[in-house]
Image 1 (cartoon, helix red, strand yellow):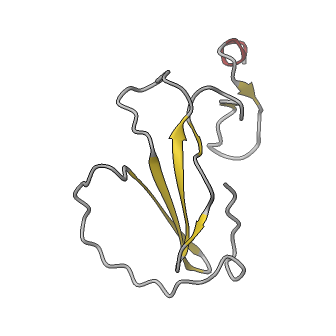
Image 2: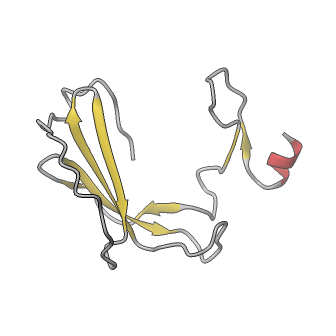
Length: 111
């Protein structure tokens, strides 16, 4: 706990299995923030994320990054993060998706 808080992180013990107890606070200079409005798509949402600062924990960070959220079934969610400025190979995997709405899903998504 002392090491966590000395880094400026938040400490929150939990009984949830495998959940982290140490994490960056919401106002941390690390990570990404919403870069604009959430765009409604035919299967879910799309939003641009921008890196918060020039600091990097891991190196080679990409900014901006696009997050696509797809409500595939009432029990299955797909999310995809990608660099909108650089094309990459993606495995050509076809997954049938009836495309439910957020109102029908058995889960909640918050940005």
